[in-house]
Amino acid sequence: MTGTSTAPAGTRWLNADEQSAWRAFLAMQKVIRETLERQLRQDAGMPMTYYVILAMLSEAPDRTLRMTELAETAGTSQSQLSHAATRLEEAGWIERRRCPGDKRGYLAVLTDSGFETLTSVAPSHVASVRSVLFDVLSAEQVGQLQAISEAVTQDHEQPR
Amino acid sequence: MTGTSTAPAGTRWLNADEQSAWRAFLAMQKVIRETLERQLRQDAGMPMTYYVILAMLSEAPDRTLRMTELAETAGTSQSQLSHAATRLEEAGWIERRRCPGDKRGYLAVLTDSGFETLTSVAPSHVASVRSVLFDVLSAEQVGQLQAISEAVTQDHEQPR
DNA sequence: ATAGCTTACATGAATGTTCAAGTATTCCGC
DNA sequence: GCGGAATACTTGAACATTCATGTAAGCTAT
Image (cartoon, rainbow over all chains, first blue to last red; front, top):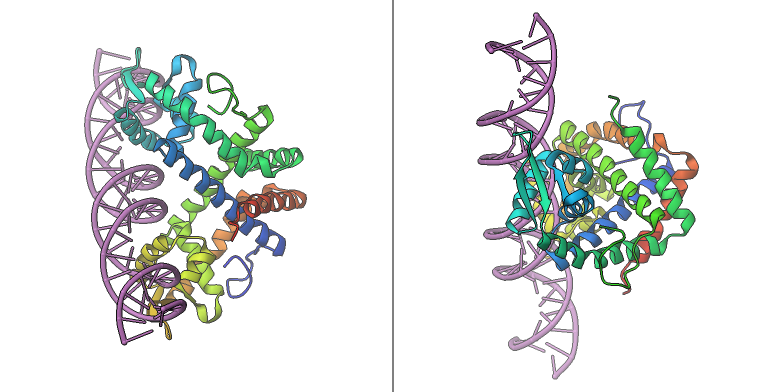
């Protein structure tokens, strides 16, 4: 039900173009997510969320970030990050240290082992991203996709 | 790590454009998924997967589909559908009937209650889809998004 | 007609995510 | 400098998804 038929009048349903674009989009999303998720699971035994967390840490100065900042840059909730950090710490990929100057806080630090893991998985991850997305798009389409993505996310930013 | 630095030579990293397109895309995906998921959870207490299942059933002749077909059209795995069907049946939104002619199979039937629920939730769902996506895109961009989506999914189809 | 493969679906354990609390700190105004 | 609100993070329960496996029924070639 994204279309015609029974319902309170006044609902602006999707027209045919929007309808098919929407379904196509859902399908694309699914293909991409599943492809990457499966690849990472196989090659590194971690979900994509965890990969992104490690990746963000690897780019931070001293491979270290405050939990909250990490959650923000990785695009996860604090709760999710906290659970993830527990698992990542068990795996030996990160460490949590008390935050100097703010005893409420913790710093997440990427360990050497974590960095190595990331380094070893990254190439095949990037290859997957390429093969599922960029290899099938023209340069123009890449630009279009970015513009579309930014339109959606920018519109959605909270007014502070 | 989607970029430069340490790693086996020969890896084709993403260039700057691809990199930023990719991150923008991930962010968009997240915004859209979370928005819809949250809205459906609030308004109907169901995840989007379940909504799609009900929606597909509502469009089928007699609001009935064989489990396998339903899984296919809804884009879920059979296992996922089976679990979902259990929950949906508990909620009284669908029924499972033995499939005449093939005693292995089951038919999933959308109940009146399920149809009513769907009917009551659909408008706000569509409104969300609109507000998060179509309202911020031009007609041209909608077309571009569809083309991009199709490029990805078509390329990914299994060769039979 | 029967052995053996395949199809249709269910089930259970493992894992991730979300939501709602809960516990420390820190900040702020008076 | 003290009470109360906000911040930083954790925790546990509920739920969804996945993977591997299980069971029943249909198909097919001999």
